[in-house]
Image 1 (tube, rainbow, N blue to C red):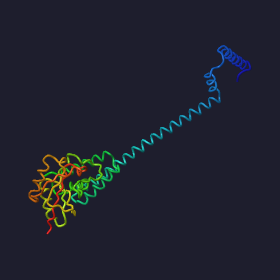
Image 2 (image 1 turned 180 degrees about the vertical axis):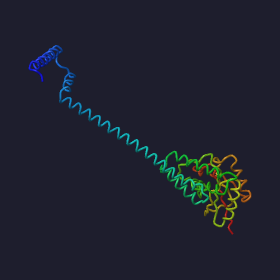
Image 3 (image 1 turned 90 degrees about the horizontal axis):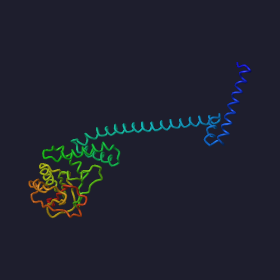
Image 4 (image 1 turned 180 degrees about the horizontal axis):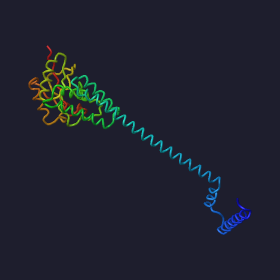
Length: 281
């Protein structure tokens, strides 16, 4: 406990300090805005407001950081799940695309094409799909390709590169850019009813020469003679001679007729169509 003398001494010291502060304030002129603000925050009310505000800012900053971190974590988790889903899809569809069963090849192409068009697969996976499709086409175009490899290439090309009755190709909407100078020679066979045997013979001779035959289509349009239609500016330099040589055993009299350029707008590279005149008995 302080004695009365000690208490009085403390009062005298505080009074002296207050007097000094007042004299300094009077000598420096009226208080500035900053000094008033500083004095306010030195008071109990000001100190309470300052600490409350700082606490609120700190809480808001922490909440924002937590929200950002959660978004990053959720995005990473979603990316990992999407990659796992895409990998699982390719593990299932990949064997179907290279299956010996033509119906499975057709089904896998339709699914892959739809997923890629809807951007339902990761771009990196789409690139692998493109590579798989191109490699399958290239394998089926080799002279020593197996019947299964030819069937797989024919299935892909018949979906992405179908013929049209007027002789011009009508490409399907597709994400895989196969319409380039790397496309192999394809010959689509157009027949009338009753010409199946001639068409099959032509298909075998073309395939034996390493030419892809995506399909045989029955049409109602009559032509006066057997002819091969193509776009003159969309074939490789040796493509016509290769097709002529391939057809020599089965269709030796076929005439090669370049199409009107107006019909070639959507025709892809190395696209030929063999039209049979009606020879049905």
